[in-house]
Image 1: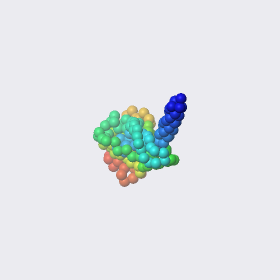
Image 2 (image 1 turned 90 degrees about the vertical axis):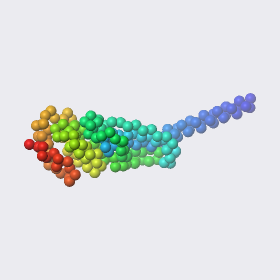
Image 3 (image 1 turned 90 degrees about the horizontal axis):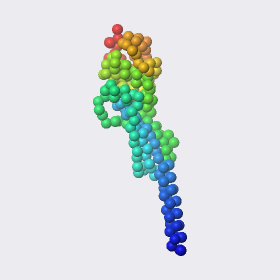
Image 4 (image 1 turned 30 degrees about the vertical axis):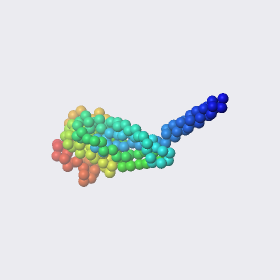
Length: 192
């Protein structure tokens, strides 16, 4: 009889220990999102860590395409590459808010108007000019300017060259104000 009580106590302690360990493992995670600065794909990552210590014992990563990265892939605007992920933001396991340079262009990757803009630049200018705009879009210092330009771009793009050129001329001041690294120098010449 004594042995059965001891075994029940051991089983109870082991069960409670496993339950506590499982709860600690579940709640001691650091989650983050990063953005590829080549194509605009995102990576979500969950790191299972020791409580309140930056020691990861297991990590899960998942790469997802974005509106912009699907456009880039469809138009073949960048060569096959290893993703170059830049940390955008994250938190957990005692960290309230961690931010990185990727936060500056994460929004661009999910901005439908920007994807339509890049697609039409490829269609009505060239893939090389669209690739330059892509580079600007994924630059932490310049991304917000490109998004500002694309703000009035129609989600469906333009049906012909004349309508695109009309929009381009109407927004030329904003386009040229992007600064010295603007790809405008390569595109002005193609306007009528």
